[in-house]
Length: 253
Image (cartoon, rainbow, N blue to C red; front, side, top):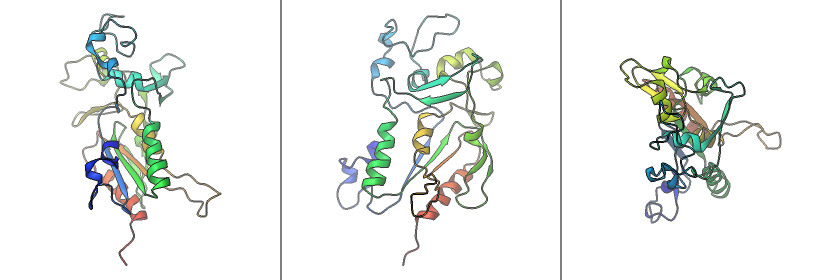
């Protein structure tokens, strides 16, 4: 995302830059895993298999507690989030982004979008995430058609269980945990499964404008839509993005 928006890149120079003056910036992120914008690749280096300074975020190889074999996508989850499990039932009360020196901190993206683009350059910035959250079950019938039930509100962070394995998948829950570090945020036999978002979700939701009695309008504004990548139809996601744009785009003349 920052590569696309970097004003020093060739595509943002000249008479027709990608980042156009006066244009609304809509960012769409579609993924079935967690963001893994890496700052230190040593934590993903297979040569570090026996180095506890770097393999600490690797999952133990299934069936061999304490043994590390390969870095997997689980590193992205383990090194990028902190989860609370007060009663040790492998269902987490909360998961938040964490800067452990492995991934780029989410503040890097939030600060650029909010301070540089929105505050300094006076741009309108909105975001759509099609991510690993449960399907949305209800939407606002009026613009911006945002989710009102299901979706992020129904997201549960938990480890994999045998019941999560889809028909025809030869892998066990232990193998899935080894691969991803966290259980699925959504699951659909037709479309597959997806890891729940934490980092992308926090960046997206940071764009929302809350009620503020100190502003002239005192009006909350939605700038982030999140829908499920496990859906078979993404029309509701596009409707939400279009609903936000409707507030920003003014007819010519």
